[in-house]
Amino acid sequence: MTGAPEGESVTLDLLKKKMTEFAKERDWEQFHSPRNLLLALVGEVGELSEIFQWKGEVPKGLPDWKEEEKVHLGEELSDVLLYLVQLSDICGIDLGKAALRKVELNAVKYAVSKKKSQTSITCTDNNVTGSC
Ligand SMILES: Nc1ccn([C@H]2C[C@H](O)[C@@H](COP(=O)(O)OP(=O)(O)OP(=O)(O)O)O2)c(=O)n1
Image (cartoon, rainbow, N blue to C red; front, side):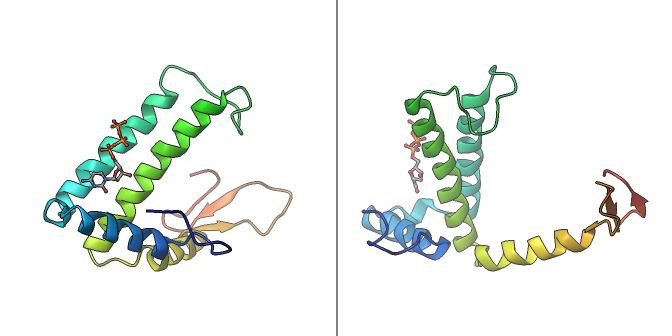
């Protein structure tokens, strides 16, 4: 498997196709049930968490991290994404469309306050104004 073709952006669809090909080449589709993919996803979230474990709060951009630590972080983030893409695919969910729809739902649920001086947001589902 190679990366994205020259000049082509990485899309969820490209990742989905590459993982379908990856599983097919190895005859691993038989193992890729929704439950198995979910468990694999959770396992990778655990591996991702281990990277941050015991470090305390870390500044944005991870300025003090070694290059190899950042590479490792990228690998674990990718494992989570790749299992999520496969899980969505096997469940017949268009992840890109579902996520865009969720962004819209979130914007309605957490409406931005009209008073720009305030940093508060409004929770429309529980009628509370302020942080929620
Ligand atoms: N049945 C499988 C096995 C692996 N993968 C893919 C998805 C992940 O991107 C990666 C996971 O591989 P590993 O289980 O080897 O996990 P790690 O790469 O995290 O290795 P390790 O757990 O040794 O750190 O491979 C997959 O799609 N289906």
